Length: 415
Image 1 (cartoon, rainbow, N blue to C red):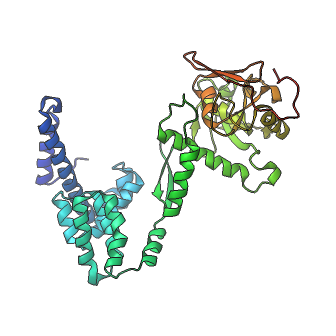
Image 2: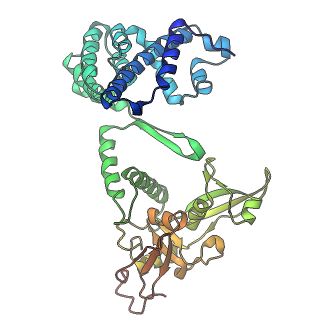
Image 3: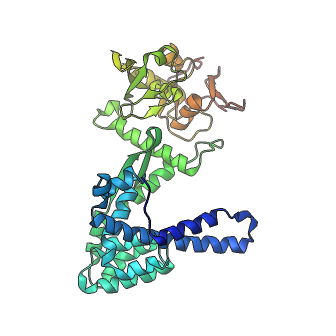
């Protein structure tokens, strides 16, 4: 269906067509700098006009009439916006007309959509008799500061205006808390939200500790380390919730992996495993998950379930405990500072027929368990009880001393 647009939008389209034909690399740096600054202002102005147009089509139910969708559904399903972004644009569009000073500054390109989102949300809680004063104060800050500074100033302004006391402001801020986990591509997720001050402090300290580099060879970015730390924290809760004290932290997870018959017969090579959430996992990820879990395979022939296996715990409790006594209560990678997390079939993988006995068991942290399953590393146990890890480039790291052993163990380490 052809799109009908106004003369103004036609002019913008023509100007953009000319712009994108230019090569930024051929301009002096000063021109490129000026262009970026001006384009950001123009982007803000266009965003403001989008909000004005969106307010009209929402008020007239235009998307319902023409597309059979509500406005938000149209933004998500036909304009391919993320649901969160669509909801924010629609919220701004529905309320922007109440705050003409904010609308004017946005149309001038002096503030961004992020500024407007903060201001609109704040003004919705302000009594009508002081709304102009509060709006003016917020706009003065927004003109010179990023959106987070505007958000941080809201409570101070409301207290200064006598609208709130400190306790009421704190209660309102606490009421904005919330976390959302949304699915993205291939079963991965996106984490977003607002944390209370106390949780932000606790989480920052926990991630700083649990997300410290494992060793000198740990090349993960800080964001990757914090991600893995959050998984470790979550696993700790799942492993310890509602368990007797003697089993706390030692129960393997239960994993249901749906596997096509032909994939199973080919030992997961070139196929995908499917978790109950619908997330796809690679062959090696499926093997890593199965390494220290109670696994229930669901085997498919086409769309038909032909077998649902019984849960089978790979390492028994006494084997897991014995491995701790033998190797110490930490990851066995040389000089790793992370606590143990996953018992690994280091000699022969369980899926390859490896025994779930003490000789085949070694405790690893989440990061080093990932290395030996999905990053091409291998490991072996030395005669003195230490371990040698070899990278895909044949770089080796070997334990520099015999792992910690109890005073009751006077014989030679297992070989």
